[in-house]
Length: 172
Image 1 (tube, rainbow, N blue to C red):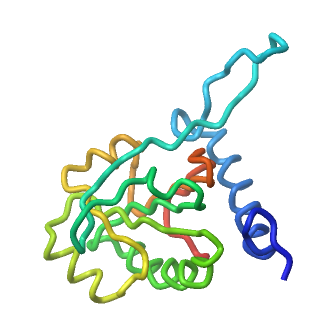
Image 2 (image 1 turned 120 degrees about the horizontal axis):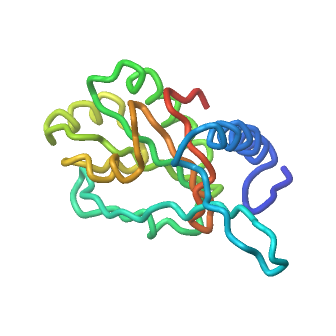
């Protein structure tokens, strides 16, 4: 199978289509996903994609997870909570997609927002995701990313550039 940037053409196509939708959505939103205008070398205004905001959060299994440690991979940062029905609905799809594309450099970081560890552990045991689950115990990272509802996902490229976001459940 052909590959581009280390991703299969099928995966790249899905990411491009999803990315195009996300960038269109980002252009219609205030704040998140919009880059400030910068003056380029030619003296004209150019739009540059923003860097994803770095974070370090405790991992459910112990230790800590940092977004920057995964630079070089395509990362989906997915904010969720156990009380969210849509979060339950998307979890199996997210895990299946992760497992199918992990070898291509794709990663998901599941960010639980403001729930006790035992609740998060029960949820994780129910779905047994192969990707890291981290604890945003005080909602600081969700606030930093301007998460307005759950689930809410952000797409970060291999260089750490925020490609876009998706409010609501994903069906990969």
